[in-house]
Image (cartoon, rainbow, N blue to C red; front, side):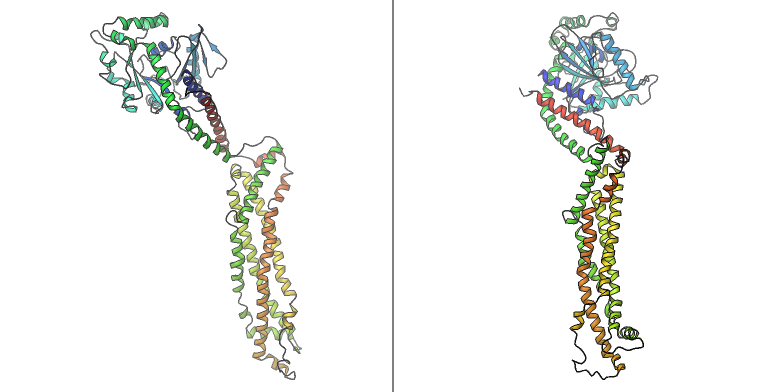
Length: 609
């Protein structure tokens, strides 16, 4: 069972080393889930003397006012032999055999963290004591509760200390060791008062009564120790500490323990309780109780570690890897991010992700609707047909068919198709740009690097702009080709006047009658509609070839070419990660290290045996 307390000791040390002190922040805390015994008491309650009696050594700072200003995680290790020494976590590989120096180091380390102005800090000091005269036990000594700030301390110190104490003892895994002096009314005890609030049923509280030997004559603490005046789930334990005179004379702690045993054994009032009184008994009770609590909590801690580790590693993955130091690493990182972006962009176009279907809507609905709105029949009104035919004839009216008139009528109609063709090019361009925005937002790695995100977006937009120009030229060429060369077979299939019984001897001016002009308009309209049907199919092909296909093939080619010319510093400027993300990643990495270490430590302990 001793290995269980050692396990928690290791985890507590790992927590402190990696910045987990149980304080509220944006990271999950392992510290709060670890069972611990917190020592709570008011100033001058004898709290320090109780701890020193359990350890058997003088090692805690003493003085007036608030002496304990940081939590002290006191880990006791029972060893064989006669050697006794102490080690601080912040001073690895240094052993203290002189416990007066231990006291001084506690004071110095407190001042290093809080300054000399008697402020308090939640960052704990870890002290391990190895001795054959202790039981395996871990205690957390908290600052003494007080009602008045001493000179040099802010007025908030009273509330600050109480809040710190509460932050420990409110946690369900905390065992509370409540120290109360017997020579004061228990109803006014600072420790009992705060314990009633956080543990009203007394299920986590162990009561210790000090200064029993200093009670007024004719009074005793039997009713308290027997649990009659204030009942807790666990029996009260009375202790007799060294007097101030004993402390001044440096009375040996082992001798003090012996005198304590003799006091209870020889007292007619307390001798029936002597078997469960004294600091030695207190240490054994605490050790056994802590072991039992740890054993009951281990499965829950394992589950918490596994769950939290998965969450932390998931967030670390989402935040991405830190920036490489060398130019090659930076270039590789940028290329990989661009590759991920490019694949997401292609997925949008190919239908793996939404958005690409809007391009088809341009071809299937927007372009046909625009062509339909051209209203060629109005352009081929009788008046307009007659005007263009006569203008084309000039001074010499046409002899058989008004070929030049046909050409002018067809060209004037077909040229209006350029508008819908350009609109289709622009509509697809807008959609391709929209997909760039989507792909950027869906690329987690680009969120890490704002400058790279902007550079990739701008490079993609520049490429799309070049593709739009090429597409506009190619698409308008399709329209211009239809204007420059008419389909001869269409006109060869038309019936001729003579074949219809027409008389070639009619007056030239009869050729301009309404019936004749109406037939010309109908013929031109049929031809223009044929061309529109053809362009309705060929314009999408041109746009897809010049814009969509090229966007999939070479969206970032120019950007890659420019990247290859950049130096390490320029590449680094593209990877200017948000400082908040860098801090978050570093904090997460530490916390992951803590949880992995905790998982390994728990797995190594055969706690079920």
